[in-house]
Image (cartoon, rainbow, N blue to C red; front, side, top):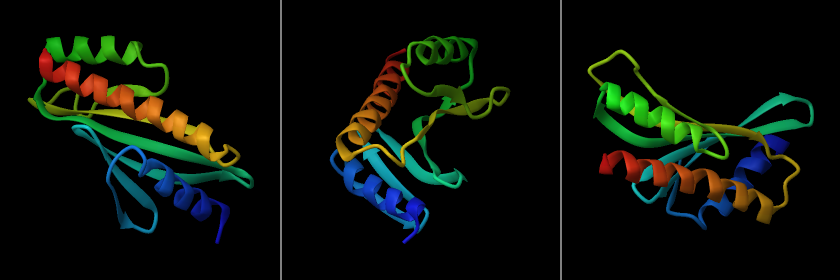
Length: 133
């Protein structure tokens, strides 16, 4: 098993602590956290440098208004990790996604769980705030 595959397997076990998981293919793990779903993938950038890429669907098919743009910018600026973006800044509707990529290959299980929890919980908070506005 490659280092990247081993990291993905570890991430799959660890993220199951946060919500139900699915393995749609051999290269990703999907986790449901609150009203959101997130995909985790491992990318090898260089020998010995594996990063975990998290893409979280925060909200789907929202009216793409100036208020939404402002809310996404405001909520994104408050994130400790990652970035919050609209999938289609010019369309009539848009999805809102959170992205975060970090070197995870040498993190022990508890620090890895902590980082994933912080990131995914922030996405849940953003989802709840976007629905409330």
